Length: 140
Image (cartoon, rainbow, N blue to C red):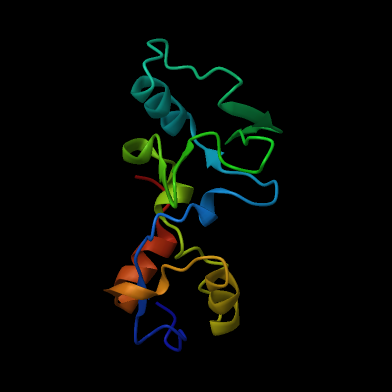
């Protein structure tokens, strides 16, 4: 951890199942080859490959697809709550929300992300060590 990390006293986050982190402007949810295989197996594709309905190639990488309304292809809405169809095998990018490096760069960055995520600044407490561990995670 940086010695003067602004979040050294910790942060709070608890998912409210609002689905806001899984929708919005077009973007990318990057998927490694192993994550691709795990998702495919979870969905019952025995060959370990996902059809283009679920994944797209972007340069040399792969990203999950989105619906026309901006929702992730795996976001399932049920009234006022939302959930992930592949939660158990969701990509690392999803697993580490909201403790992404961009969101934890400064208090202003955290506050900006919290404008669309009601789970930020409430719920479970994460100390600086836990936050750094999540921020630096690069594999399952």
